[in-house]
Length: 214
Image (cartoon, rainbow, N blue to C red; front, side, top):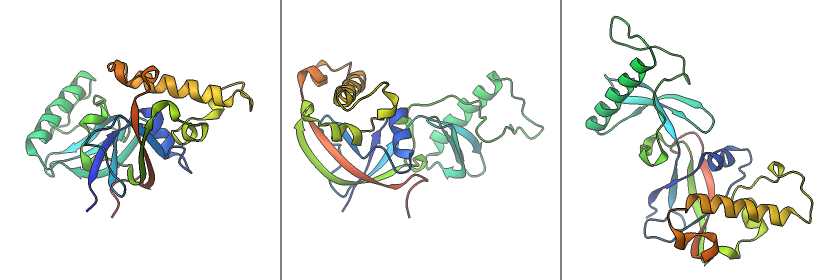
């Protein structure tokens, strides 16, 4: 039976997956037992904040940092302790931002104008994820075996590299990937590009960008 597994993505990669058609269809990860397998479902963790909260429904709305998109439907929080912690933090954030509650203790702002703190993707609730993926292939290979076509599938945008020619495209793409990879693995010297570690290459198709698919 397919598993549902989270993977965290940077803002740049979230935006690449939101493009139509998506600019990112592969990811490379250091191998671990937590990684998904073929046919497994992945929900993408990304930076977010609480847009609003509903004490009666123990639910929240969510803003996504990558494109500042406010998701307006209510998202239930199964753990009441987690909800209460969020509510207290959000009330503090609103007061620090100078927002004044009405006579019923309610705060008001337009969708996308939340004064609440941004949170890292690793703290995202599963049912708050908007991007869902299905793994189509998976293999192991040395990191430095990556090709130009692979780097394009990793989300590189040639238009951000100027000037670019057919002769320099491969060099520019590889330089982008090396910088991006090392910035994510700076705390683990053995995982850096220069060490050429074995990585899991995961290919996927995007099945939803608007929340968990039915």
